[in-house]
Image (tube, rainbow, N blue to C red):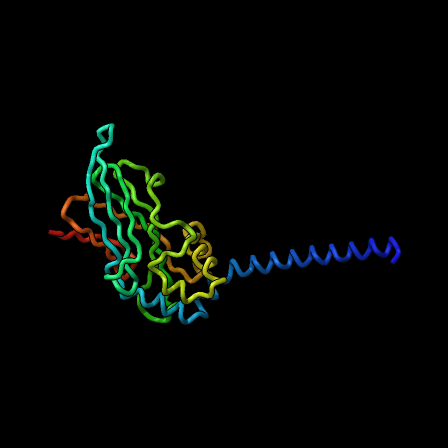
Length: 226
């Protein structure tokens, strides 16, 4: 093969490789932006898993482990925070220990409500993603993370299981990103995304049950643990 022909062949191969790479990027972008929509409308297992969340009531609880003073004299509360399974409030799926300044703890969650068309029934549905916990005098941005953005919460095992392995990261990353993409709500089959921060004064010998209402509002009920 002459030098000129060899050069043309190499140029042709490079061009094809560049076009293939561009096509791959385009396909990847298409699926990253459209897959969650397709998953919600076409995956019956996923729709059923979301629909089952309407039975949720109790979603976890918290207790005060101890209260101490920092070297500067600041009251600090050590809190045990427990999340329970979506289909059984008696099953613990995660248990964490947090320390907040003061005796008032704020629990911050992101609520995602899907439209009825996507779950094919007339009831309200909502996912909630715990974001952070912080004390009364602590800016929310400085709170401790409960769940890491983009990850699949362990309590939603049934939802994650209903997704193919290759779709799991796409789904959960999109869910976490919805709060910053208001224009994408209708495309993704989401009715509303909003924050729900509740706070309560932590005291010994009390158990604080977290519950969720049918419309996605999280609230706390306090009981004597003695």
